[in-house]
Image (cartoon, rainbow, N blue to C red; front, side):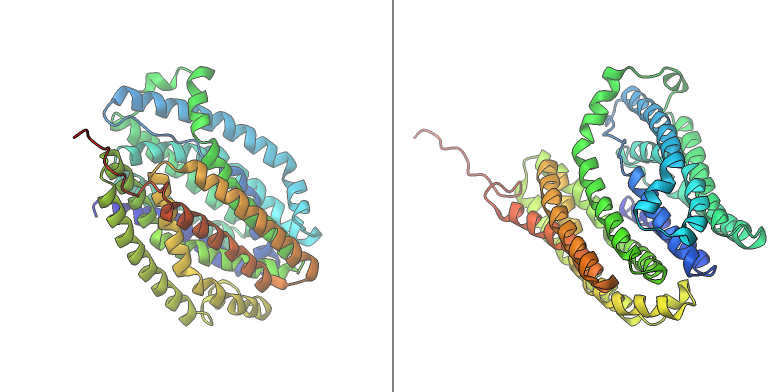
Length: 423
């Protein structure tokens, strides 16, 4: 509990601040909310390149070297990505179906978010160091401070300064830099990162293993995010109200799913630990218990979302058309919560068992099927409800793939027969 509770609070911070952003920007109008939705999806896709890697358990020098190498990579890649996004962001938004009105509002937000690209990648590295050392409290403290700054800047820049969507983007970017500054100071103060390691740029041979280790997971994450980007592109063809409604639904869904993210993290850790000891039975028993807990949490979330389906949309927008779309689709999102929770635990189980290749292959097949569904939804005008119904295929495909693997004779949780001994 000492590890899980701070981890849960930590993963909740970012989506909760997303709720604040969506609510504040939503008060500026449907076009502003649509612009932020499109810009945010393009920006987030570019950031799903996971840099953080496993850190040494007891070797403080190794921890420092890995952290320094990761930070160098984060800065180099982050600056490069910022320049690319700054110059090509307009083309990306137009490719997603943004019209002139949405472009005029969305580009300032998009470019303000570009300023934070290096800081977000640096955060992944620093948070990975602390998590690898089983310290979830430090990132939580840094996140709390960052989000206090975020809320203050949101209200100050959006309303007091009157900068609108640009102010919301700057508030988010500045809060990311606050988090990195605090975590950076703490990782040095606690002795996990030696300043002299930061002064020496890593050799290519040193960083290649870090990049290779993340290729499969990066592919999986980017396929998932890419599917949501394509869904946003499809919904853009249905008008600004549909995009605004989609952004509200996505924000609510992401926030709700964080309630069981700590179960995913805990399952990874426990499964890896017990399988490392060769204790498959205990690992299997733990997974069974966590699956039941996840299903229960998912059911509670479903009830909460269903109960709030009329009130929740009014928190984010006063546009009746947008409210109606959110109210219509929210029951589908709610009813999928138990499946989302169970799927997250299954993913965590396979990650803990180092079944990354299987997870990636499953995502490739699932994403291809969902992409075909999204093409059909766009072509035949299924609307926002049809697009979200297709998106649920991501959960169903991942769950089917994980269940197949875990129930098969090759399952990492299956007990292996003891070798025969000579009589």
